[in-house]
Image (cartoon, rainbow, N blue to C red; front, side, top):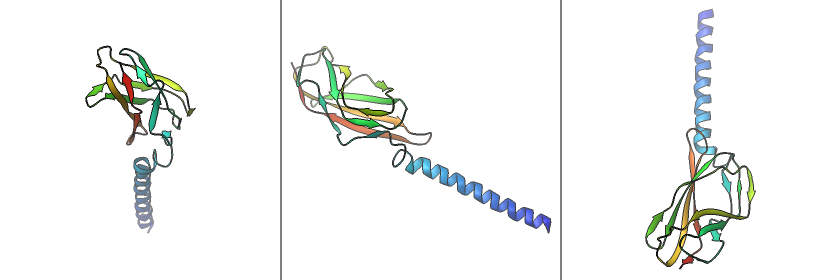
Length: 146
């Protein structure tokens, strides 16, 4: 009789542990980073460059209004586009939690870039937790390089 009760408790305990594991994994995979623990909140996915005209080698700064909700490092890969895509060095941003609304220097234009009209695209990558990452795509206004 005692052995039967022990087996029943053991089975229910195993099922409860499995159910708890499924719930935790489901939370990490679907909810965390999407509804809770959101890396970035913004209404503007198009950013504004500081100037409309640049020279080759100039530093580009962008103004983007956003709030960062997690205290993790983000990897930002930037491309410069004018029909041809120029890949710029990756940036690691370690800004803390908070809201930002200022010009931030992000890159220097290559010195050998031809004149023309360009825009920037950036992919911001966050590792939200051990099983999920979130990517955001941001685009800049068009600017001229002389």
